[in-house]
Image (cartoon, rainbow, N blue to C red; front, side, top):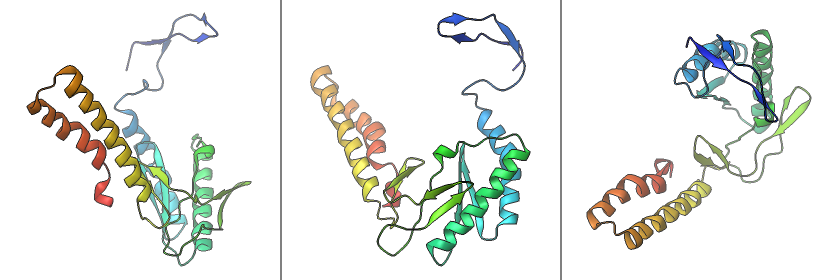
Length: 195
């Protein structure tokens, strides 16, 4: 990561080329490793400060989860975890995009949750619709109906493309089967172990 240069272009006007010796290139494979390594301290701090809250991270997605007796208790613990997270971020020069913050509540009772997570001056309601997290659609009762519908739609779309390849492009049956196994089944069945 030495010898890199950058040129800034704003409204079609290009600036001078300048050497850059900080940061890492966009898409670098080392980025997620550094991200998780850097944020480890936040997970430790939140988990020790807020009982029953645990962190979950995948690449640059962070989640806090807690098991509690009711939605108000869940909301209160998540709000506390968020407050500790934001304090840690401020002390360590990190900024989170609070516009991407969501609340998911999984419960046995039917109906939309009424509690909200208080974060600073904002209230984040629990999502009443299914939410996509890491490619899996989750609803509050974990029925996974939305996941099934999305995967079925994507599988049908992939199947139509395979039919086009077979009919228009003359794809041989043996190759058609390989494409079916490698592409269509993986698209249609993604997350199916959750069903």
